[in-house]
Amino acid sequence: MKGHTLFNWIFTILASLVLLFIIAPLAGMFFDSSFSEVRTTAADPAVRRSVWFTLTIAFASTLFFAVGAVPLAWIMARKKFPLKRVVQGVIDLPVVLPHTAAGIALLGFISREGVLGGAAQKAGIMLVNNGAGIALAMAFVSLPFLINAARDGFAAVPERTEKAALTLGASQTRIFFTVSLPQAWRSVVSGFIMMFARGMSEFGAVVIIAYHPMIAPVLIYDRFNTYGISAARPASIIFILVALLFFVLFRVLATERRVLFRREDDASD
Amino acid sequence: MLRTEKLSKRIDAFSLKDISIEVGKGDYYVLLGRSGAGKTQLLELICGLMNPDRGRIYLEGEDITYKRVQDRGIGMVFQDLSLFPHYSVKDNIMYPLRVRKMDLKERVDRVQRAAAGMNITDLLLRRPDTLSGGEKQRVALARTLVTDPKILLLDEPMASVDASLKDSIRRLLRRLNRSGQTIIHVTHDFGEAISLASRVGVIHNGKIIQEGTPLDVFNHPVNRFVARYAGIKNFFRVTFITSYKSASAISEKRTRFRLTRGEYPSSGLLIIGSSEVLLSRQGASGFGINNIRGVIDDIVPSPTGFEITVNAGDYFYADITHREMEESRFVTGEKVYVSFRPESLRIVGNGEDTKEY
Image (cartoon, rainbow over the protein chains, first blue to last red):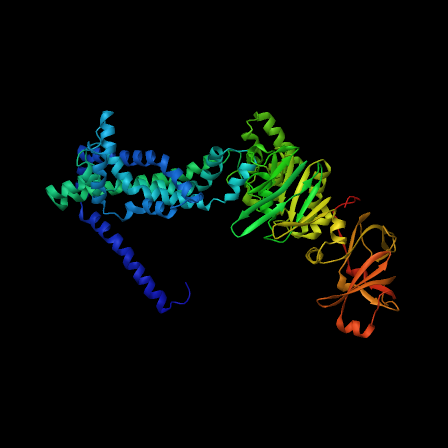
């Protein structure tokens, strides 16, 4: 970078401070814990169960809600309709709500007295204090990440390619799966990963719905409350590492997955 | 074959008004107009991507006004070509065949045939983003033509093609049309129109303002817009005669043009810009210059001076300035020489050796 002006120096320093602010606490946590502590905690069945449970529920929740969220994203990208801005506001609402408040709102909805909870109970499913309820809480606060990322992805697909497919005789459904979705794939997957990551790290909304079975963030909180910071720290480290591992894994898989949309005979790149 | 009846459509502030055109089987219909004239919208109405507010569309006698796009049997190649970037060339061309649930052997056969027809067999495994404008154009055409469309709609097909390749695309389109493919071609370039069209429709502000054969439209423009759109008035259907020493061209009215030496097709259209035509009483001198005798037929004021029409068997149009007019004081009925340099002659439709311009 040529010309180290005062402007450049100030911006570099400010940027470094913000990055340091993110890195320092995480690095500190790793340095403050001994390897043996982490190993012992990792062997703890309660911790293992909780981490695995969190990942499974977050993934299932993301997958389940993607079925509706992706079409909603497509509609938001392609269609004009009255009150569209209001709908966009509703989509963004969970981001601005205090998550405990979101949890309370959701609890009213899925408890036995609530609309969904009542219906579920008739079908013999308890949503509160249950994996299903936790999945709903995770989805409630993390859906905007998937919807908005997918919407941007669909909006970036040239509409002409969809029109061209129409003139070539394809149905709307076929066009969605063979033209729109493959071109928006990167954004959709990116949104999927963001929703998954946001969902599995959710505490506020989940803790209102279900303290047990314990997801990892609740377990960390529980360890902190019961035994103090030194007990919460190794559990945190394990959860962060596992979360990072899955985050990277999904990214890699997502890039691989794109290849499936190309044809096997396509060797040009 | 295709007939539109008072087709109207309002799109925001713009509207198409009472568009009635008729395209016969095997026609090459060029829709000519500036950008924003409503050409693309008209194509989208015809192929069914939009529904009209009023009016009807008939294809082979059937009312298809509200028929689904997919069922109309009309193929369209968009200006940006709209190839699917995530598929190879082969899969792009195969796309409409997969939609039609054709069996694999038939699909592969058709793709091979279409690729051979467009001369893109060696590109089949490439991805669209690695192709040149001309190659993309051929792929887009192949992808549409495998569906055997009753009518092929082309939206500015030369727009993404290098000037040097326009000739080969033009040749391709002409060959396609000669093989029986009915084509509606949208363009803003009158050169394209006269070199390809069997019929031309001039569209302006959402209305068709003139329709006819290319020569009709350009020789007898209905109004100043069409005239100015053409930009030129002097164009002649000619036969070229070349020999070892010289080259010349003879028009249908037997006017003889001297040309610079070079290679010419057997026939074509000669164009001279009105500003390059000089008028004098004695004729101009200079190496190889054309001097053609005629009589002044009309003198009309133009934005830059006067436009003088000379009848020399063929009609010539010359633009002269106010000052030149003051000096020469030409009057109608006067005998004059029409002079122009061979270098100022342009040949249009120099795509191939044919009389079908």
